[in-house]
Image (cartoon, rainbow, N blue to C red; front, side, top):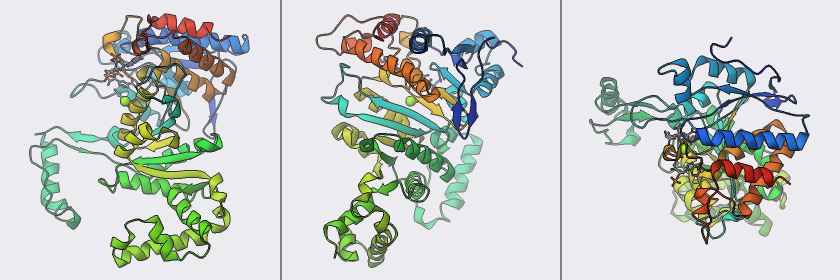
Length: 473
Ligand SMILES: NC(=O)C1=CN([C@@H]2O[C@H](COP(=O)(O)OP(=O)(O)OC[C@H]3O[C@@H](n4cnc5c(N)ncnc54)[C@H](OP(=O)(O)O)[C@@H]3O)[C@@H](O)[C@H]2O)C=CC1
Ligand SMILES: O=C(O)CCC(=O)C(=O)O
Ligand SMILES: [Mg+2]
């Protein structure tokens, strides 16, 4: 079955039922070390994960690690250009849950991203990146502890399905010509727009199914959070790209108010209901005026549409959500992408789950990680219905590779997410405690050490792992 790798002789497979993993006490879990700093981070991570499992379960549970190959290491073993061997794909499919270090993607030309390939091959449609603060972590912000968000990033389409043609490419030029001469003129709303002939050109598809399955998972996650964190914010640039980014928002609301009607309230609905709660006799038009500050400037048709919206909301959910009942529901709102970047800095505690399309979530997850301590503290998971691959938000950080210097926190915390996904909460909690206590005692790697006031002597990557383990108890 495998060409150059052999699964461990002990251990059993994780299986899936209705999208949930069924986990034996000794699961076989494939891992990819990763390029660049993977050589430093992975050994530190596996040490911490094994120690936590052993401390928590005293030998009753144990992970059987299965080394698989991707990136530079794969080419060394399998030959030139064998960046993602069939063995690796077979192992992930067979064992269902894997963890990986970062993999290099060249800019401009060269191979396409292996990270993206893995997410697409296994349909890992939700990229889940929690950003929470550990006390004592230096941050450029005054109150980083107020940020506690989870970026739920669509992981298979948008720019990940981006189809591009280089400037001057014959097919790209044909596409530009068809657009300029046939398709754009046939769409009156595009007016006199024309694509400059010397353009590279790309297409970013956003599908209804892809958007809604991501939002569905985000809402299900919100249902498991404490009441005060039960919020899902749809992030988009729908004011500019109405039929891709705007559609993501609309499909998100549609899903929330149909599949999860009993559990959710949209922000706009909450305004309508609370206007009526404050004034039982409020007219539909007065209510409409209050939810739309620009009401007076709108056309009569548009005004009638908003009045109708108010009427529909009151008729359909006043009974179930009115008289304050909506306050116990999951709040679903939306924010334009540029605005959310300032909102997570100026009003961090007003947000919880940020559901995004692919590119917006890529930017947002790095930015949110920066607030709580930087990329060394940014874990993540790529989750599908029958497979999950855990990995940090950051990349290979090549200039730090092999120096035993980089912060392994983000991959260790990705391991924590994996343990939680397996249902091994006790081991996950030990690591969170150990990491929190190490940081609180200023036992940190260079990235955090240089920001502390006064600066402290940094620990090596491997020493940080040892410090975490010492702080288990
Ligand atoms: N999932 C994946 O495998 C990903 C892969 N990549 C790939 O990684 C390669 C390098 O990308 P690049 O843009 O340099 O981004 P990186 O995320 O690799 O690194 C950028 C900078 O972030 C800081 N940083 C990153 N990781 C850590 C860490 N663990 N601890 C502390 N600081 C950290 C370092 O800053 P400083 O030097 O200031 O300390 C580093 O120089 C590219 O090929 C890219 O495509 C990128 C993202 C994700
Ligand atoms: O695949 C890559 O090289 C980059 C991926 C990335 O930036 C991310 O997943 O956040
Ligand atoms: Mg990224």
